[in-house]
Length: 144
Image (tube, rainbow, N blue to C red):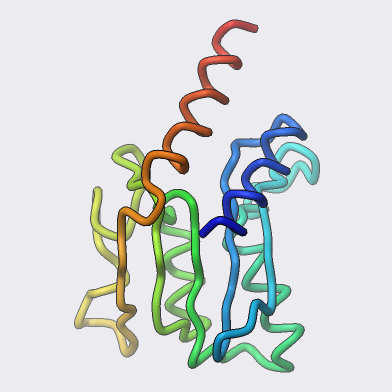
């Protein structure tokens, strides 16, 4: 999660919403990502999507079984869907997102028995640090 926070700080420094993601497979970091929606002018350029794309490239395929994704903020529905579709086994979340979270805050797409894949969810890892960078970012944005 500390590496995911480092990714979030990269987003922060670029004026992006500071969310970071790291994909770990069999104990090895295989991909990282941070939000780039503003820079790329792309709605899907979320940290998780970027990290998953890089991880698939590194893995040589779309199935990321035996993998975990660490994210500083609870994934949105799009990112939760990408986590499901890539067959990631576990998501480790820093802080929950009561406005857009799809891993338990608003809905829980990752543990829905109707889907053919469920994902283990761990929450609250470095919760304060993950929450604080978001609060700081939006506080500064409001000042502008």
